[in-house]
Length: 245
Image (cartoon, rainbow, N blue to C red; front, side, top):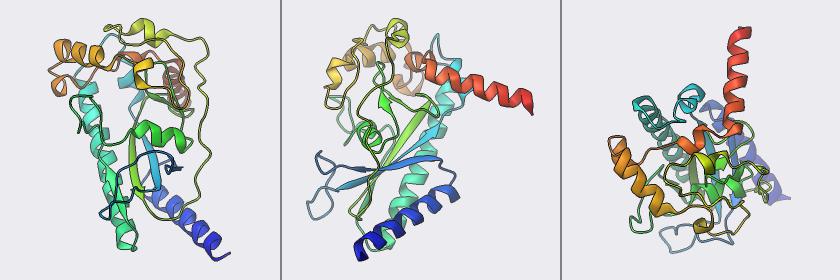
């Protein structure tokens, strides 16, 4: 009972903290079956707090033919916001006497394999935020794939959310067809599928560096996300709200 009260109390605190900081989409993932980063004692963090910050839908809809400066600026703005939230949450957790570590947004620590210390998307699917589309990006019900992700690891005992175990892209291949690098394999996601079965990351990276190097040295493209129907629904909903105001 004491442990249950402790977990429930933290859940209420986390909900309040996220609300105060303007984060509407977040969840908790149980990562004990994975290989998350280690704390200073060499133990892997058992839990992750995953959250999503939405991109401007009008900017996202404009990149269907390729990125522009507005998209590059929005990418940078949202990444900065993610890091602000993640580091603030991690700091507050540590001040409460628990171990915690924030995972920086879009940080390639392994430049050979083109990846970071841990996939934000893995934490997000295990936290129930969404599934991985054929464009190898997280798709949420609320914002489609027009989001960027943050993750905070902790050893605080938490009640994990229900993981997403199935994709909901159906037979849609718009992102695959739109990819100028032909880097998307067209395979549907399921938990445990290798990234290489969905995305040729080297082809994607090479295309961006060759054609879009002026945008964060080739880290930006967004075409596959721009054509995603789940994202376009957000734009339609946003336009409806604007017209009703």
